[in-house]
Image (tube, rainbow, N blue to C red):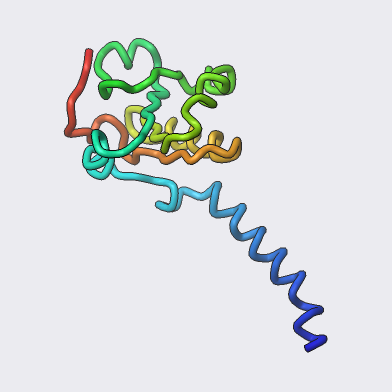
Length: 128
């Protein structure tokens, strides 16, 4: 029994370290496919954030998505805070910028998901 009590804190530390590392990996744990986003688009309480540039957004975006370019994400935290009760889905053109934004928002405590492959794989409605 004493043996287990001695190793328990070490195991706890290892589990915490592993969990933290998962957050920064490119694993599918925080990714969502465009197909799945389309399935839940009108059915669930979600917020869509487009982290592309304003020019890309004007060319075409998912209806009801909010434009917050990646480089301005940290400045828009009060705006994003209003979305905290929703599942936040972040997208860009191909999924790279949205992955960085997802990691940043998850670090801030948001329930954020990265739409993998971005808007180029989106088969849903587009607004211009």
